Image (cartoon, rainbow, N blue to C red; front, side):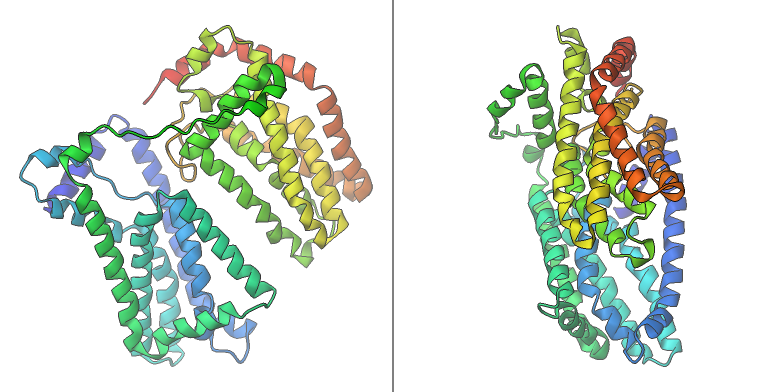
Length: 488
């Protein structure tokens, strides 16, 4: 039966009307996957020697075990966004003599061979081989690798349970941040304590039964859950949900753009892809930790200008680059109404203005790393307000591809085109190059002043810029409507 299911899905893939696009994407993903696996293998081979040099006198195995907790939570978050769970159209099978158990076992069994389950093995198997070459007991190392495989499968099946819950995702991120903060500020040695616990998987091979039992338990929980859902009545019955209508009366103070602003806020909160964009933007606030903690950059590096543009403008980039494709499902209806195009675009710009201000306020604590960081972020926020918002809206006039808002944001290329790649040049590269050149030939203060001044001038001229952009949208209105009507 497994072979039959695989054959049917294989035929469905090659008989699809979008075969060319799907095949091209899969070929690109294969090359990307091979590159990622090769990097993991090289990292696994060198990991023992890197840890030996970085932490002399300490057991590399114990050091690796101390990071297992972060690996488990981090992989859960990574899989939530990136892993596509295996699906199968079960309705045709419910009216033929096919055992429901076989369907459930096929779906779960297929997920066990997911690409994501091999990432940990491609890292730790080379590391384990190096350990055995260095004289570690082969039996202990092999059992430890089996435990790693079991943990990876447990994460895979646990992802089935939490994949549809945004609350679980937020909880995982908060737990990860809490553990890191407690460990970073040395309030409690979480990493060392859990490291000793995971080290027992190597030191006492009998403990392999724990991750094995957890893997079996998570499989069984998923099996029972899916098995109870496979009924024809459940597949065809009408789903009734209680509507959660928000008045958003406070938006009326924004006057003529209030109806559009309400529409955007409801769209963002009610759909998976836009909601994911909001969560991603909030997480990007921590992006500065990758730059500001590096002493090699210096206090006024051009990389900080890139971080400032990126942190304060992340929602502007994520949301703005797909304007007006977010409204593609009903764009033709909007354009058939007596709605001024300028009001429509002003509401989009207003939403991006608010996001830039909020992201800058969230980045203020980075002043801990130096007053220069705060000044750079402020200048970058002004640049985003005055220059990048009109740029994003201008490039939005090139969008003609429909977007399904119910799909996840990460790993989803729907609605993407060459526009989304070209927009990086004016948004990111131009301000960074401007800052670097002026700082190199003149001074840091002048470079910051120029970025801020460009933003202020652009914001002062926003009415004229918006008029020109509105004219472009009116000219391309019918081309957008035709493009958004294409569903395949």
